[in-house]
Length: 335
Image (cartoon, rainbow, N blue to C red; front, side, top):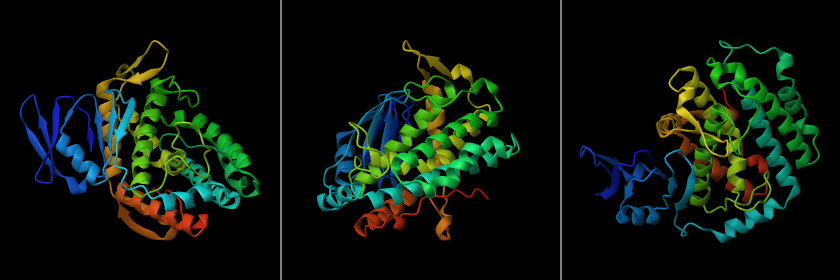
């Protein structure tokens, strides 16, 4: 659930989440069984009863400012599995496992980036030479002998991708030059950072729900305050889910340059109304049923949360069997 209005009271009523608008008194009910996480933007009121029930069910509650700055979260510790986490940490030091995992993840990220660029051929049709960096990196992943080399190919592909991405925007007021994240230096990068943050926090909750540790990963390195495993797992979804949603939002004309502002440090951020609009769009993507397992011939449609639980179970199998190949990344097929 994404709660984006401060004039709401969120409580618990007979096993359902009760959302009351304090302005007009309107009340809506949502089954708590259908909720895998609650994200609060601004200052809505949340009852102690609901917090306790979320803790008992391992449902994380996340807190953001009106414009999407992340503050922190409430989560139960009952799901922690030290035996599973010990195996995870052991595999994080296994060079063969980490190489196999990293190669598969980066392959999926680059393949999905190319597919996104080519899927907008009605707006811009790329010449082969315009995608040289992406295609070269994709073709040479198998010759890499270290994660550093893999990251070199990934970085080259990412530069090429962000050079191409502005060509898909019909509103050139949103054109940008390369990826900037800390801080975002233009409106499009501001939306990318916001979208990546929402999915990143969502994935952290799913990792913890399954007893894994979000800070120990196989591609991204250990770093203070960084949930590296969430960074590993988000890579395959960036282009097809987040980037595509933002491109569609810009090209629809629903969001304008005036919906952004610059702070004292020169960072560009969305207004509250723009942040709500993007949150609504991304929550629709999360709720939408679609096929995520086309690379293993599973054409069934799943919501993002259900799929993510399945993916993390695959990761657990990979860790316990010491075989990174048991995890199959999402290869996007928009047809």
